[in-house]
Image (cartoon, rainbow, N blue to C red; front, side, top):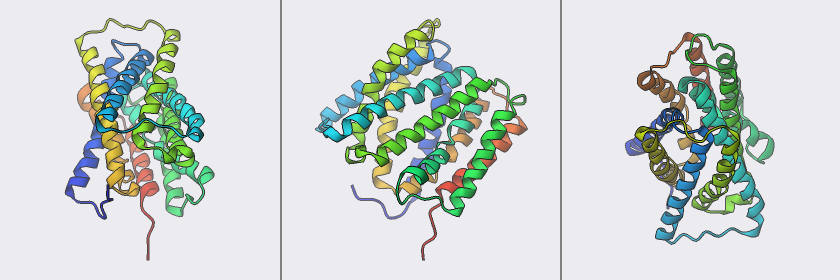
Amino acid sequence: MAERPRMDAFDAVSLTGFALLLAFNQVIIKVVNEGLQPVFFAGLRSLGGALLIFAWMRLRGIAFTLPSNTIIPGLFMGALFAIEFICLFWALDLTSVIRTSVIFYTMPMWMALGAHMFIPGDRLTPAKSAGLVLAFAGVVIALSMRGDSGEASLAGDLLALAGALGWAGLALLARGSALREVRPEVQLLWQLTISAPLLLIAALFFGPLLREPELIHWAGLGFQIVVIVSAGFLFWLWLLSIYQPSSVAAFSFLSPVFGVLLGWMLLGEQVGSGILIALALVCGGLILINRPPRTG
């Protein structure tokens, strides 16, 4: 599919909508955690998503083939995917959506730092370096100021940070290993297929699998499988296939903004001055990190 040379109104609405979906995703996880143990929930999501993605690939005639040099990084990718969502789902069990959104969506910051160290030609520019400083300052403030933001847990905050690092690691593995030769749909199926058994086995060590689930919790699981993991992740892959990566990344600052807004509006979470300062620093940092370099 040809890449669009410039963004139009539909492009902007699509990217804004996806950022909103990512933020709403955390609200759904927070709610479903009340009825399902977080790791068990994550495992069921990966299992259901793998089945739907496999069916979609069969319908489209996309072959699930892996060159021999991608098997080891593919296994690492699946394991890293499992670790990322153990951290994210447990973070949302311990702390607020507002706090998790600010910390977890610093992923582009860690990715830019990792790309500078491990991917040739992807170096930090002065603007990216300034963005890293701003975003890191926002993380420090979010971790240190917990008294004015309602439900807060240092363990939950650190798990959200670990989830962001895992997400960045996934992106770097996809870009810097032989997996870059594999279709994105195959990468996604690989992540879901490997992570599902790992998560379901790990769930046995995290307490009871069920927490008196009700219809709303099962509906939330279905929403995660169909809308987030299947349609949402495929939509993300479609966005990356037709837009310049810098254009897609430029909208990343919207996810923490929407996360804070939805946590306040839908869950009644408290928004203190400290978390607002952290949010502003993180968003400013992400804008600088993802700003395309000047040409000419």
